Amino acid sequence: MIPGPSPVVRSIQEQMGRETIAFGDPDFVRDFKEVLLDLRTLWKTEGEVFVVAGSGTLAMEMAIANTTKRGDRVLVVSHGYFGDRFAEICERKGLEVDVLASEWGKAVGASEIEKQLRKNSCAVLTLTHVDTSTGVSAPVSEIGTMMKKFPDTLFILDGVCATAAEPEQVDEMGVDVLLTGSQKAFGVAPGLAMVWAGPKAMKKRGDLGMIPEYYADFDKWLPIMHDPAKYFATPAVNMVWALKESLRIIKEEGLEVRYARHRRNAKAIHAALEKLGFSILADQHVRAVTLSGVLYPDDIDDMRFRTILAQEGVQVAGGLGAYSGKMFRLGHMGNIDEHDLVSVIAAIERTLVSVGRKHELGSGVAELMRNLQ
Ligand code: PMP
Image (cartoon, rainbow, N blue to C red):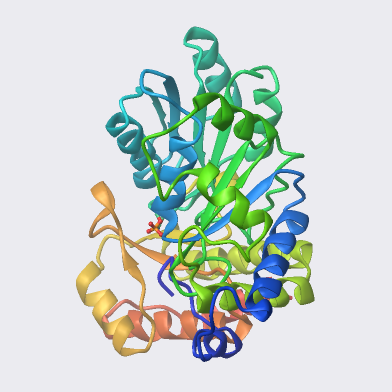
């Protein structure tokens, strides 16, 4: 239950375990085309989509590399560790970087971003939909609507910890580049980077001419994304199949239903944890549905708690930065079900008993169940 990779269900594992075939095999070409088409239609965009072997960080790098040139100014909105990563990538690339950072657990509002963009116009705005260090979900729709006032600024959205769990209708929300990875709400193992790029972003790529990046270049991949029978660099055959199975599951469930399930589950987990004496780092109105930053009551030792919880069968991640030792991070995204949630809360209750913290046994599970109704 760490915030990614999330648990991988058997049918997706089976696709990774299949005998690998040639990437030019007509069966694979057909499957890859279907994956690309699904990604376009489900995320409601007329733009391009890229699926390449790599992790979320490569997708971040692709988004920046294909839309900026040395000296361009970028506004990085940061709600934590992964927002800051954008600033690092941009600095490496010789960009002028403005950072608007929130206190951890809070989000920067659209009006603050607007004020900053009026002060200093930027070629690109980067936003992390859900920052995995804090469990804060950014108000993407609101920011996307505001960004319509800045037609010369591209809106890049990091969906690594959000896509397939938090609503992201790319064109409708005014997003120019959406990027994500396979290992979180898609419920696939790590290994695929996905990038959606709208017309404004593709135009910008065209205007840049030759860029220094090779593997990360949209222009190199575009012919393959239009016709996967062509070759640029070897696609991750089994991972593409795994993603195809993930998309089959998503279509069977329905994206809107999947979003609603994540919302309901998150609300129930938050209620159960609060009942047990924990508190949630993110402000109520910006809480992510994919993971929670869970603050300990004062008297609980982080290492002891997480070690016992792992013995009880549930692995969670530690807090980052200033929250190291003060909080744990619990993932609740992808293809997990209510049974998993009940097991997790029950294991947390047993762990509380082991560390000597008194509570009414079963009260967390009861609160969870009440909220799942
Ligand atoms: N952005 C966010 C919001 C993330 O959570 C992560 C990974 N935890 C990344 C970017 C980087 O992705 P990866 O680790 O797959 O390179």
